[in-house]
Image (cartoon, rainbow over the protein chains, first blue to last red):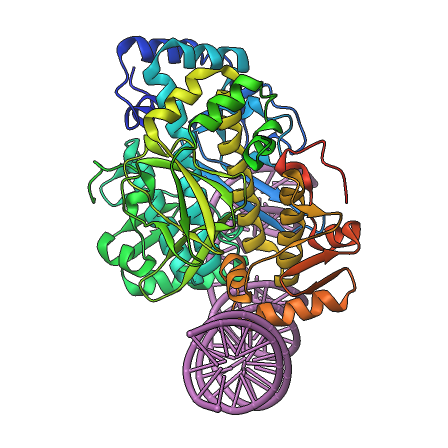
Length: 240
Length: 240
DNA sequence: CGATAGGTTGAGTCGCATCAACCGGGGTGG
DNA sequence: CCACCCCGGTTGATGCGACTCAACCTATCG
């Protein structure tokens, strides 16, 4: 079976059949969550790695006064921090955005995976490195991109990441986020996200309705967002 | 010799004398840079890992139109991405802020280091994980902290990181950044940094003049910044 | 002594937040 | 079946935080 996880990791290292089997054998503990539930909370001592099999999740931090920032989006095939077990306590929370099914790999089995083959070891390392690359790009977005650019940039990133696991239909993909979810991720208010969405639609570069986003002019959207795909290190993924 | 690098890594794993020797043996290629020079630029294919021996450096990205964001600050003892060699090309640049002396470890010697001992392997992995933790906290700052909180938070972080390598004198440390450097890191304009510095000084929590920052009330500053040190995973470092 | 880098100040503007109201659709219960 | 609710989205008015532009100040250095 060719899962999202396989496709994701295959971009990082050429997995053998044995690698895939070793991987799948560790996906025994499957859990389901409804939308907007916590997979685990800040301060806990993590005992397993979450692999997103289906649905969207996020990493977030929140202040006591309610201010909340989404730090990362997790899509099908994403592993949430393969190496967290080295840290004592989580400094952030993990939450579902849509209904989500995850597999939980216990820590001792993660080490087993990394020892199993150098290829898998490398793939998991690249997973964290590239997650970090994305984190840096988000820092840049929040620091220096305007709200419209930020929104456009997120759409470019999502298009590419979803395409890399086969979840796009040409320029079009499922976008199950509410405007409030987008606001959390973009560091904006929901009201302003609403207005920027309208503005972006008005450019004609994208269409967005009924939980679906269609990109009509990917080059144009990238130019608007100053999107340079190299930070995702998915060199072989083409436009559209 | 007990270097900044030793002290830094010792927080992550208990280095043996052999580990320290293996490490030091790889610091043969020392380079010096003036202030505000590039150690290497976005798009290059990196061939070595930079270790900061002295001075401050930064990771940054910049748009064609001049907008510029500092993504990370590197202090003495910091290793700039021990695992970059897994990536094809750098998606960001590395630049000095002050005069800097760095040691460049060629990639093949990095692998040698990681194979040398499980302790070193672990220490280098923790170096990247914690760098990522810092990146996330910066994302949070840029997304949801006010400019004053951002500034205060940065000072809290710097105090703790510098203290962990022995570069503070109680609450006081060398702060060689210009207001423009701070602005790049905080996603603000230099004018606004100037005003926020004044406001922060006016609280009486800190004093700042002549390239030196003194924190008078670390608890107060942390409260203002909503600084929770757990993301740095330096559990044993005390206040002041 | 002039040049330059860093810091300071003021005025005007704009991006985005906040507050508040309202709309529309899907689900639920009476 | 209809009334209602609630969630997500939309709109307008207002205010503030931060930017821009521009001038000026100060210390350092050649």
